[in-house]
Amino acid sequence: MRIPRQEADAMVARALEGYPFEVCGVFLGRGGDVRRAVGVANRETERPRVRYQIAPADLIRLQREGEAEGLEIVGYYHSHPDHPARPSETDRSVAAGGLSDGVFHVVIGVEQGIRGTPTAWVFRDADQAFHAEPLEIE
Amino acid sequence: MAIRVQVPAPLRSLTGGAAEVSVEASDVAGLVDALEASHKGLRDRLYDASGELRSYVRVFVNEEDVRFLGGKAAPLKAGDVVAIVPAIAGGL
Image (cartoon, rainbow over all chains, first blue to last red; front, side, top):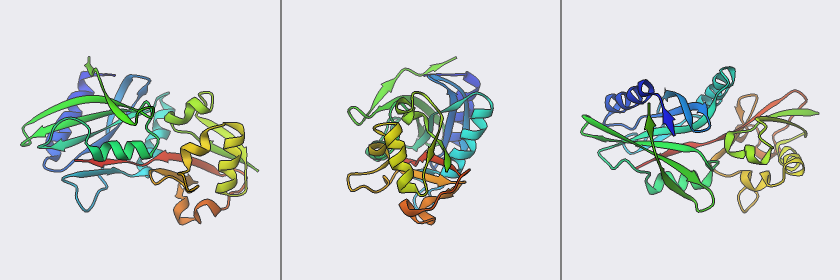
């Protein structure tokens, strides 16, 4: 997937600012071209250091916003404070239970709130797994 | 009664790429049946093995979650807009 540098930088900055909690957001774009990375509130109330949830109402709002710009929701991002920048088993099981085929996920590993490393993945229903995806920051 | 259904990107391979489709239905269960009739394979993506809405799939009628409107029995009327939305969550 491709993402403009300005959007990628803002996404990582947001993950650092949100540390030690998980932050999350939505990618609006077309196909593998992300045009905007829109931060949304982490609605997880019980364990926001290790879990995130995006409110369906936020998704409906962003889907509508995107349509007005000729864009659609093509993926999501979330951070892993002090954990590796790769999807967890929790991430995989949620994706497997829902509508995630072909959807991009960026996971941002955040070390001590200082350094953020984004990695990209795409979920495939065929084998119910995330696959590493080249992340092109342009 | 024509109901407009907004389809998320991961399901559009089943709707010929359409982001929105129209079906006739008087409740949510009927809507899923109608979707399956016109777009084969959609039901399995919306229901789990026991025939209930999948836990990570949310269905909204005019922006109200159907879980609070009677679930599969939630009534629909002409002009309603139904949104199918994935529940996005995860973590460590």
